Image (cartoon, rainbow over all chains, first blue to last red):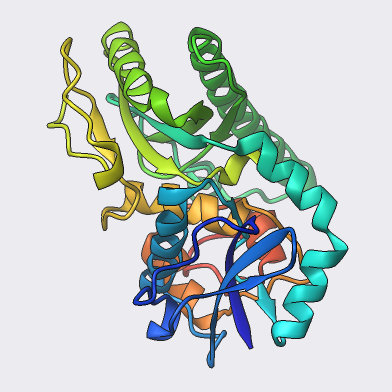
Length: 228
Length: 90
């Protein structure tokens, strides 16, 4: 079985001979006349961990060094070389077009957290204190909880939309993703030219000064996960 | 602001002259860094096969160990992630 990392154009530099990926297997190139797939053998696809995710990402980053790849969704498996090559042939034109759109570009992200997180009230607190004794009371409690979640989601989306609107300096598209957990609000990703990475960082630095209540962390460069 | 970290070797970047901005290469170990990694690898990228096979055991460690909603519940179900940590509703 093969684990797939990313797709590139045929003729792009192949993986270096000593590059290894998941399970320390050598990464190799499978090519059609138009496309190439970076892949490695995998014996235990059911084994997953944070470290495996990082091993996958390190391979994609290696590909990104020489040409922007199309990163595959993690967990993409092929029975064998034949299945992998057939997939490339069947989707050739579509994948080539996608590669052209991201050529010489990288994904840069900014992760947004609140510097003054407000502890979310325990949605079950009221229930624990005074358990609903009737169906009506239960439904009202559920309605309040859902409304609170909707309001929080709307506020998050509005803030991310505001940040996207303030970052119009970049000619590429932007994607925002609400996130939750601790003080996380969400992330915004941009597709930027490789030569504009520093400009991106400087722009985010300015944005940070304009929003002292937020904690902004630049991440990347990534392969264009959010734009394929 | 936190101290800036150098970027990848291929893109040697000088510190921004007008200040610093925290930079995370996405391969760190803190939970926020892992959010970026997991969000991209599990929820984004090209899907070219009919089924994405993601194990349960290993990703359980990801999902539960971080103790945060890293992907939407619907995505978790789509990817056949394991059970939620005790005390959390699906």
